[in-house]
Amino acid sequence: MALLEIRNLKKYFSGLAAVNDVGFSVNDGEIVGLIGPNGAGKTTLFNLISGFHPPDQGKVIFAGEDITALRADQVARKGIGRTFQASTLFMQSTVFSNVFSAFYRQYRQPGWKAFLHTPKVKREEQAIRKAAMDILEFMGLAALGGELATNLPHGHQRALGICIALATEPRLLLLDEPLTGMNPSETMEIVRKIRQIQEKGITILLVEHNMRAVMDLCDRITVLNYGRKIAEGTPERIRKNREVTEAYLGREEA
Image (tube, rainbow, N blue to C red):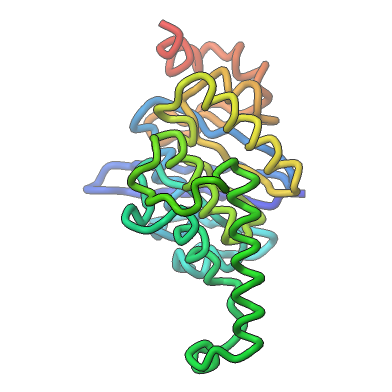
């Protein structure tokens, strides 16, 4: 069953098509890769799915519901979480605070009760604190909970971005270049964590330039070039596609 359906999406900037009539689907429980050269439209497509930009044409269907016109916060409440290429961390806050603050969807008590620190509010806060620590533990950052985000090495900052996305309790997780700038050992660890996230029942749409990781992780791959979809299929099929090789894979391996 398709959890996410992209139908004929188009997005123009200054008259140029950043995304041009793109359509594909992501099935429940899959890891699907979205690849292509720089400027192919991958991040723009993520922004359209997650509500940061409205499309000029087409639809985004999530869990059978048309979410095309929803704002980013509304899309997140529907169950789509994401990371970003550039850091969106609160650099002067602790690692724990970054994750704890992302649990805004979890609060059930009204603001006036929070102000009064009622027993229900305290219990809810304790539960959220535990959930935040569980995520940090899962991603291997629990020991760094008291550190300022700005003091983390690059690999840990990328992992913290995934923690924040997981705190929104996504059913679909959009990972935008999660391995960028990582050394080989960090890369192996994050690849392992992505597999474990899938095992938790979270569907993943992955943008990544590390082709070895993409081919290893993904059930299917969609390829963009100049805003258009040029190929779609299993990793083996994509690896053998001459148009993909000429547009992207061959360039990466050169």
